[in-house]
Amino acid sequence: MSPDEECPYRDGRVVIGPAFKADAPARYARLRTLGPIHPAEFHLGLKGWVVVGHELAREALTHPALLKDATPAAEALAAAGYVLHKPSVGLGAQMMEADPPEHTRLRRLASAAFTPRRTAELAPRVERIAHDLIDALPPAGRTDLVEAFDAPLPATVIAELLGIPEEHHLDFRRWASQALQVASPGHRAALAGLHGMLAGLVADKRRVPGDDLLSALVAVRDEENGRLTEEELVGTAMMLVVAGHESTVHLLGNAVLSLLQHPDQLALLRARPELVPGAVEEFLRHDTSVERSTSRYAAEDIELGGVRVPRGGMVVVALGSAGHDVPQPGGGDPAVLDVTRPGARHLAFGHGIHYCLGAPLARLEATIALRVLLSRVPDLELAVPVGSLEWIGSGIIRGVLSLPVRYRRV
Image 1: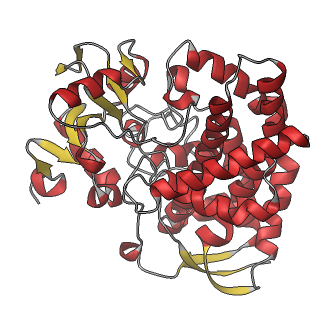
Image 2 (image 1 turned 180 degrees about the vertical axis):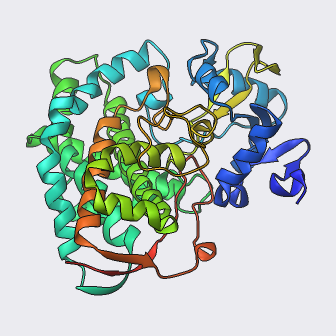
């Protein structure tokens, strides 16, 4: 197979579309042999550069001239007759798309929800949710593990954390699953649905506050006016919903799929459940759910990995690729899944000021969910060929839309 067949190019740019995403680990491996940065075409025909090497990824994620502010890009595109459509359009004013000082202010306000103490306090509830989901399955049969376990667990956790009433949970899960699939027909409708629901809940929490994060954010808005605008309040809630749900759904899905493809590793974790926390780091490294960073834009002409990126140029970091391009503690082949690997190095949660605020919660959920699943479901196997699985075709998330399995639970 030629390089062009493995990584199709259009007008000198690698095309990162549905075919690429379905085979992303192999495609990124090929790109890394050719260099750490490549011109790329993304969804909606947006053009920019993708960074695939680990050291250059760290540099790009902290580069002082690579910002979330898309103004230079919009100006450059307008001059060329194009209109910029940002991948996160509709999420509102929130820290994931902000630069300092706005980012610093918004992150400080949201970070209180994700302290180590508050995260640890969620552990019993996460475990109860995991057991309840397993209990709801028939004793044996076939199910879609994404629908039955991977999606409802983090959805329930983040919904309860924010104080989203149970009657909204189904809509919330449906909208959250589509919100990051930027090329899907339901993308904008999902964002509109989430925005409307959360704006309505803000009004409800203002009338009747609860012991939840959304009520706390409303209090910050109302009691210390000027620290959080109304749009920032709703935007922060949307960011927490979307980022806190979908990434963990597919962290679990990718981890289980990897184990089913590597039965020796599955057997190891069943025999030694104490390995699960370290194995979660290996799953994050080996096939992370957040495949790419959100976009950054050059505030001025810069050089990145020997490549000139002009002012307004869009740069995206392949977080999943970076974990395969860094020496691992204890050595070993980074291409190999090894659940005993000590301290796996990766950039799955990013690097620098935009490092994922919810990383401790994602680790907690994944560790508990996998322990419960492996202990309660001793017989688990794929019910369809791996090649028939359908992968998310657009956006920054990597994962399968469904994971049909045969199982027996206890």
